[in-house]
View (cartoon, helix red, strand yellow):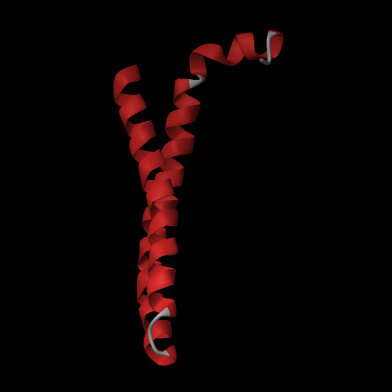
Length: 79
């Protein structure tokens, strides 16, 4: 089960980081458009933000699950 959660964790990481890179490049592309067309394009790209939120949720949930064997020892040795 640990391997499956590691895969889910890395998928969440890729979705979260990928969304930020996508917004970076789409913002650059929209800045090169005309004012009205760029605003319309930017509003259409915000549907991509949901993918980032799902990726962040997967990252947090799977990270919490992967930390379950270490919760007891975390209080004794925080490093």
